[in-house]
Length: 188
Image (tube, rainbow, N blue to C red):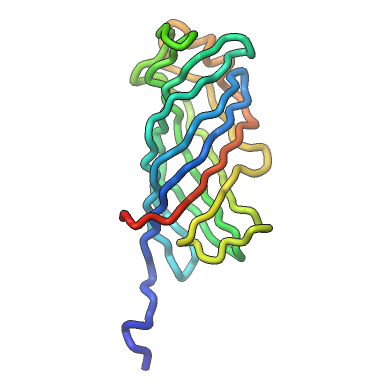
C-alpha cells in the first residue's frame, strides 16, 4: 500500500517570475520589455498546463519607417488562457494577446495617438519553446523560451485616433520574435 504522503497530486501550481523582450520587425522597429508573472496549473498525468500572465505595462522606444522616433506605452490584453506542455525536456507555451498602446509619443513627448481602445485588431498568437539543446528537467523549474519558425505576426491597429491608418500600415506584419525567462516564484 502506498502512503498518502508519497503520492503526487494530479495537478500542481506553476508560479514564475517573467523577464524578457519582444523584438518588433515590421515598419515599426524596436524592442518591448516583458516583465511580470505567470501563474498556472500543471497536470502531472499529461504534462500539460494552463494559466495566465500578469505583465507590467512598459514603454518602448521604437522607430517608424526607420526615420521617426516614437515612444510607445504598451500592454497586453490576453484573449484566452495560456496553454502549454512539457515533453522530453522541451517546454512549450502558446499565448494569444492583443497589443494595446494607451499613448504614443513622437520625439519623446508629443502625444500623437493612443487611448484605451488603441490596440491590434486581432490577437497575436505567440508560440514559445525551450531549446532541445538545453533540456528542461522539470516544468516547475522554468527556463528560457523563444519563438520559433517565422516568429509571430502583429495585426493592424484600430482605435488609435487620427493616425490610425498610418500607424496600422506600418505596425502590421510578421517575423517578430520574443524571448522570456521563467524563474520559479514563491508567490502563488
